[in-house]
Image 1 (cartoon, rainbow, N blue to C red):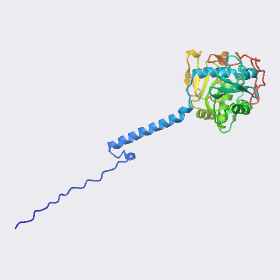
Image 2 (cartoon, rainbow, N blue to C red; image 1 turned 135 degrees about the horizontal axis):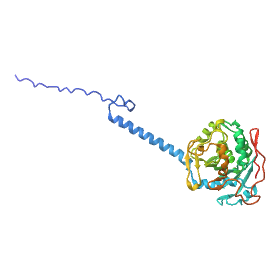
Image 3 (cartoon, rainbow, N blue to C red; image 1 turned 180 degrees about the horizontal axis):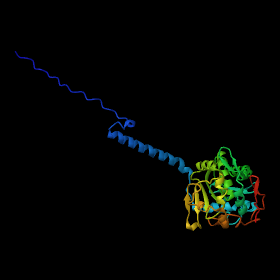
Image 4 (cartoon, helix red, strand yellow; image 1 turned 30 degrees about the horizontal axis):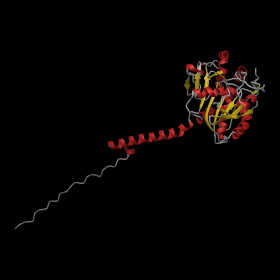
Length: 341
C-alpha cells in the first residue's frame, strides 16, 4: 500500500524586528549610519545659522576704511568753522566738494553741529571744544554720571549738550530729505565725538538708521552699561579712532565708573605707519598703553592731529574763519571754558 508522501513544512524562524535608530538615541545605538546622519545634520544646522547670521549682519556692517576716516576727520574739523563759512561751504580744505548744499548749522549750548548730504546719506558732524587743556583738567575732577532712559549712565555735560542740539538736528535731517527711517552718518572730534555717540543712540530710538559712525579723540562718554548698549547697537558700524599720546581719550577716569566704547582704531604715529585694531574697550595694546594723563598733557598736539588732518579750528577759512566765543560747557555743577584762542 502506497503511502502518501510526507510533506515537510519548512519553518523559517522569524527575524527579530529591525531596531529603528533615532538620532537623539545614538549613544545606546550602535548604528554607524545614525551617527553619520547626526553629524551631517549638525553640520547643516551650523551652516544654516552661519548663513542667516551673515545675511542679517552683513548689509548693516561696514569694515573700517582709512580713506573714509581721513574724509570724516576733515568733516569733523569743519564743525569748528564759523556758521557763515559752513552755510556757504567755503571753509577751505575741510569743506569737501563731495558734500552737497544746503548745509544746516545747529547752535547748541556751547558747541555747534552741521547737517548736510554726503555720499547719498545725511551727515551730522559735531564740534568739540577748543580749550583742550581746560577740558582735560575739568574732566579729571568732575565726574558726573547721570541715568539716561534705559541705556545706562552717561556724562551729564555731554547729555546736556546733545539735548541742546537735538531738536535742530532732527529738523535739519527732515528738511534734507532724511526723515526717520533714513540712513545717516555721524562724526565728531573730542567732545563732539562723545556728543555724537549719545546722538546715535537717541536718533536710532527715534527711527533713524546709522550707516556708520567715526569719532576722533573722544573722551569716555558713559558707564559700562551704556558701553554695552552702544556696542550691541552699532557692532561693526562704529569706529573710535585714537592717536598716540592724546590725553583726551583717558578722561573722565575709568576708576570713577566711566568706560570707553569698543572698536578702537589706534594710530601710534602718522597714518602711513599703520594702525592697530582693538575690538575690546580699554585695551592696553592701543591708546590704553599711554594711561598717564599728566604726562600725556605734554602731547596735547596729538589731539589736534587726526588722520594727518587739522581736526580743530586750525585750517578753517572763509567768513570769520572760526565761530565766536561761546559760553562754557557744563560738567555737572562745573563748567568747561570753551573760549576760542
